[in-house]
Image (cartoon, rainbow, N blue to C red; front, side, top):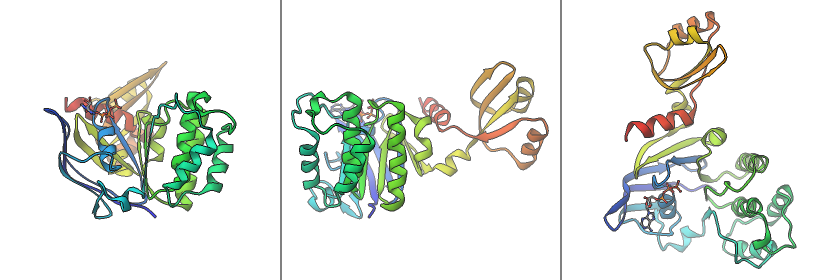
Amino acid sequence: MAAEVNLSNVTVTFGKFEALKNISLTLEPGKIHGLIGRNGAGKTTLLSLVAAFREPTQGQVEIDGEPVFENPNKMQQITFLYEKNYSEEDDKIPVILEFSKRYRPNYDEKYANYLLQRFHLPLDKPISKLSKGMQSALTVVIGLASRSPLTIFDEVYLGMDAPTREIFYQEILADQETHPRTFILSTHLISEMEYLFDQIVILDQGRLILNDDYESISAQGVSITGATDQVDAFVSDRKILNEQKLGTTKSVMVYGTISEQERLTAQKQGIEVGPLSLQDLFIHLTEEVR
Ligand SMILES: Nc1ncnc2c1ncn2[C@@H]1O[C@H](COP(=O)(O)OP(=O)(O)OP(=O)(O)O)[C@@H](O)[C@H]1O
């Protein structure tokens, strides 16, 4: 089961400040959507609308064609996970999981137990006494085991170390194969997580500046790597997003497509042509509109 999300002309204001500006957006069901944006771009505000935590100031937010706010039917299909403050949480993991299960009709207890082992989470300690990374992993266990048609992770992975995040990524992809749902993952770890995303949504200063599938986005540019002189000559009349030098080798991220003929020329010169990095495109797009 996977949910479709629709936002039509959504605006959110806090006093005079517009945190989201007239956003219209469809998130296709059964896909992993990466939500990216600079600090304060409006990601959490948008996610809290989709999760029915708040109402838009203007516009509509719908899940499978029904308004989501104060709609218990729809709300039980959504799991929204964010960095939680567990400092006062004296209960142990089994108690919290029992509570999570109560409100989530698709919750899978066996899968939760498997994940607890995978993340090496201790069941006998109060949650307040777990390390930050363990608390983040617990949030991830709740999110995955809930198997909600719409599952939202708002930067919950920050406390986790790199190997633990890797387990999380593997589990998301594996479970999406067998139990497809709609995921929204907001993140600043763009390079690390881009391979997970089917679709990318970019917000900047409350505006939607991009919503497209990963393939089309990566086709918007290329990386060019080779001997510095040759690379410089090859990219001389192109829009450069980023460049890195290592000894006599240079790697340049270029905006815009290159023809088959140019690809062959590059190949003959020993220049490697690779895919665009989402992070470089993101930096470019969010700089350009400033
Ligand atoms: N309750 C509120 N009252 C006033 N302003 C708010 C409120 N909530 C959010 N904002 C403002 O709305 C803007 C968007 O905030 P939001 O938390 O959605 O950004 P974000 O993209 O999630 O940022 P970050 O990556 O830093 O977490 C910010 O300027 C923030 O200060």
